[in-house]
Image 1 (cartoon, rainbow, N blue to C red):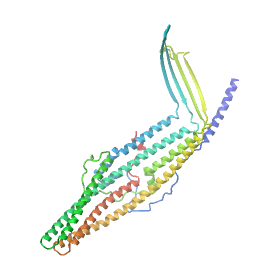
Image 2 (image 1 turned 90 degrees about the horizontal axis):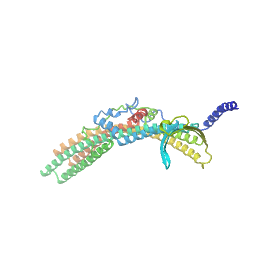
Image 3 (image 1 turned 30 degrees about the vertical axis):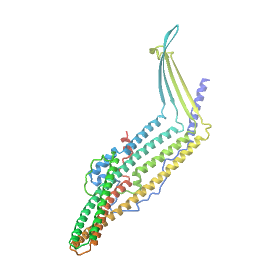
Image 4 (image 1 turned 180 degrees about the vertical axis):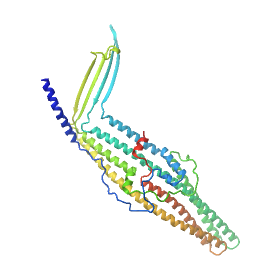
Length: 473
């Protein structure tokens, strides 16, 4: 009869395994592939001299400015947002280890010692030691789906770190270029102020000689003071920009080492590498993060579905007891037990089904967010291309205008000194000269910052997922 029992058990085992496998296949697996987005084959806004391979991670070196390089690379190590992103990545990695542990058996050890004595009874000791083990077979894949979700979260955190690096590098570069450009504008204002003061002096001399009127003097003084009033505004802008650089590099405002003034803002070569749209999307950190979010949401939806099915558990323990410590483990002093259990959800008020619906809705939201991120990425590049081209054309035009304004100002002041033209002509030429030179300095800065925006839009300045994971260890 015992042999018949063993035969029946051997026959039932394959059938049970087949049944469990069939039940596991009933769990609906959600696809982690992000939804398709229509990506154009080429950019609608083209620019001469732009073609080639991917954008280099250390793109800021193309500006050939050691001070800019030091600020950007320093900020990637000291910026508070970068530190936060690194900590979030470390947290995500730790949660992967936690989730992976659910697939493995759990073993615990315990021990105790007791000493007791009562009236009329000799004192006695009792020592106990035990081992407990438990395991929940992941027959329906709930724990495996949770592990997949945690791994996707880690990739999303790595991409978030990259996104922060891209943003910080671009912000430091843009602020530095603005700081340099504002310095040039200050220089222009001061030089024009000197010219206007000289013109004011000429007007005063002519009035004293009876060749001019007090009206000309007051007009000259008004133009001079207007230019003088522009200087504190530019100084405040430069100081505020330096404060922004300090915060971006992890310092308090005012603690940034003095920046060297070295003329107008540097510019990268015109031939910034431009990839096709599909490649740009693959190298943008925010798109990679959105893609990882979709995978994590799909795994969590699958996990919620699997939790609606039965769960199984195996547990066992071994207990040892003895009156002396040395007798632990001797024959006759131990006991062992093995327990198998199953838990089947029967009624929960629809909570498990609602959890599945919630996770499916989260998956749909992640898919829509991914599509929005892709479209925004495409728009960023297109806008950056248009902005860079416009800035370059404006700079070229203003360069010609500045040359003409400088010549006109020189001729007007010479002719006024000789009494050949009206003073109003001098004021107009000086005002035009200041405006054109100021606009030219701003335009040159705009070209440089537009280059930064284009590099950022192309996804430059971040490290790969694998390198980010390694850096977070």
